[in-house]
Length: 264
Image 1: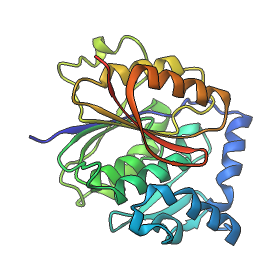
Image 2 (image 1 turned 180 degrees about the vertical axis):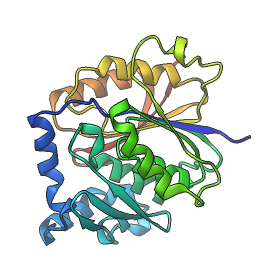
Image 3 (image 1 turned 135 degrees about the vertical axis):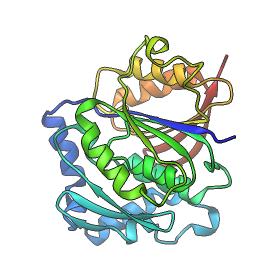
């Protein structure tokens, strides 16, 4: 029986100085001005996201990025993926944990087999994780806030049309405590919940955790990728470990990929 995957929306809709700080971190890559030192850092950054026999090989997402302002071309699952970005909100730019998670999923297909699975992505942002999961055979529901959905849907449809067995669904999902009313677990059941860099600089961490717990039923696996930047990253990680049976799938410096299953 085919399964589904959900990713929880990461965008907060906030436009602030922090947004510009985030943009500055990725600006060199977006404009194609990444120098050799930065490229070496990217290679090291995902070294643990690869299979042992791939260690030392230049990751596909590093070597094959073609960039112009606001547009990147990545290469995963044997396909070029064109992603358009915007600095209008947190969810509309590419976050490093999304790249790490895509690399991990692409290079560890036996460990995390998404073929025919039902997947939910939270805070899907630009849609890259949703696209990669779809290309790997999952039936994906990609979610985020309303202000992010137009660009998200365009990126997802552009890169999955005629390439995937299952057409990804793009939907609004606001994190919260009353999801049983709008998303009853008798109907909304997933094999995997995917989330990448959904913790950064917002005030809805309790709602995020409640959303993860709502959709994480017996038989569901949460895979959460995160780059640690602030104290709230550590606080959320502690709460995540209390809420779920947790293991560390991959780690490289501040980049970590966790797997969690429900405790009830």
